[in-house]
Image (cartoon, rainbow, N blue to C red; front, side):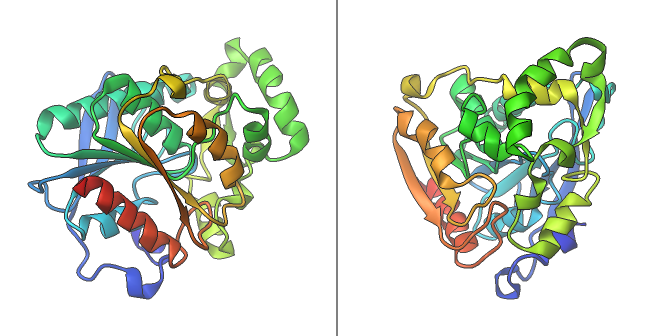
Length: 300
């Protein structure tokens, strides 16, 4: 699966030789979290890469490989419910578990390593990285590919499979509390998974990946996500600095829906548009720009 995602990159961008990749396990409460570690574990700097809905460590391999080739050690967890991470009760998964896991992993990486630590969040992982970073103070900088605040009706319209579904999603999912909260449904039923990339073959790969975009999630997880709010509102976020490296041709979460939250952030911030790139950015020159932005954040 790693190779199939890597092959989505232009051939000229694929690192040769590929960096070392190690599968490890992190015991978090009753959950065995699968964590891929890419590149030199003794590197001076580390990058913690958080995927979004439809992602997992194997899907993030192209970016982890490109980043590790630039020097840092890259840490990519399979967030609970995705990838190879093993949950004791899959139906009990909630978005709050993602936040708690991201916070604890950030603290663990900070404690294990004295050098620079940068968090990168892809898709919904962007808001997750922001939230975990501002809760913990454990990272030096955040790079997010988008910042969709699910409290915003415009964001919900873009995330949902249809406008009608977006209007009904929150009240319907609240009704689905209790026994129905544990019912697991395919992501594609509720989200606009068709717009996850601008390459039909890549979209098909993601949508058919049972550990990623072809996964099932509990209704309670989706309800919790739509009702979620960061612990630190952007006006109160004075650190860490943040770069919004947003795909310029994102047909799922266009720049316009990330800007309202980004513009409210009080911490030092920068906007970079990844030219020609879709939501899952594999197009040149956008993907090269993304790697440059993360490398610059590490160096800073």
